[in-house]
Figure 1 (cartoon, rainbow, N blue to C red):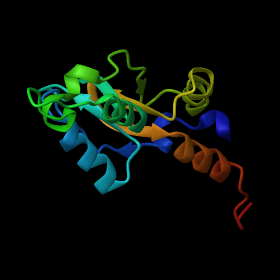
Figure 2: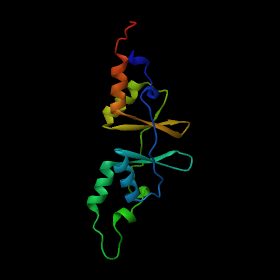
Figure 3: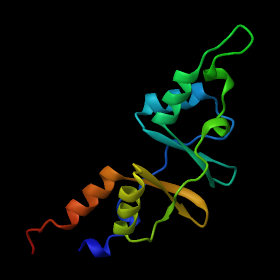
Figure 4: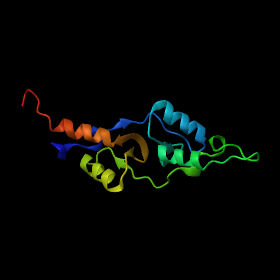
Length: 142
């Protein structure tokens, strides 16, 4: 039953995250090299401070107009300079349908998952779809 599914049924462990002092170039390399569309920005205790999406990175690259006096944005900008600071997070035990509704209503592709304030994973639209689809399948024992 889809009503029994929780966020942790669609949880992807966080492998890629950045610190506030990471450069735009480092963030770009992380995202492109690992084929991820967003990376959370975390503090010393793995608390979510912000998130950076591919759109945020692209926006900064397009705005960049380096001069002789300033280095390119890849070297100059830090995560803390352009991350989205207001980040919706969900808890691992929340109903998956609630997280899915948040994603649809707020037009969010992924949500950080936290436990006692610490980032433990990400839930994405595609993982939610797979979890919901799998919950409706009948097994041979049914």
